[in-house]
Length: 242
Image (cartoon, rainbow, N blue to C red):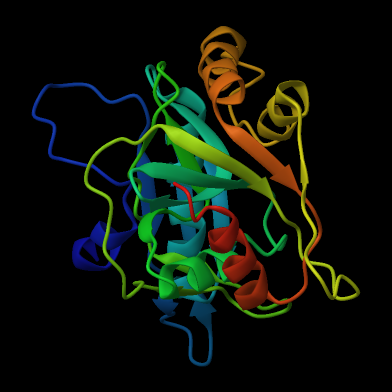
């Protein structure tokens, strides 16, 4: 089981030898019952709270990955997590904030195919200087009604923090045939980031400080788009002077 769980742990996880834990995860593997034709449930717990109960063990692993990464994002003492995908381009980061199913991952895949460096899928991780750190989890390719497929992108992976050069809010919209993003003011950029900041309720001060650094320094564009490949090409053409 440990070999199956290890790839699901948050980026940067390492063995910790000191006694005591902040959160205890337990997974009960059900399998076949002693009673003929009966299968027991697989159950996952975070401390005493149950996060999964299903006969499909893979669903427990998926919920475990979601739960533990959410916990780290909410309670990290020094870093600020925002729902966003991130790529590097010519020494600066492009951050794409947005909720699940807003089309972030397809846009990132198109940027990676165009030569960008992979930094993160699902979470942009900022330090208090407003730089974004590599957090290279496997890409979550989602199809509505189906289980997300986790894939390892075939792209260079970022190795060091980058300043944010551009924040792009580009949700998918089928009717948006041509992508015509408009520039956002710093205040609008701040609102886009805060709307996706995970720990804004329990750690408002450090979240505000880090995101203000980003909003005050980075350019910002907003606009609905359809085809990710076309939008990625337009985006990089506009950044030709970087």
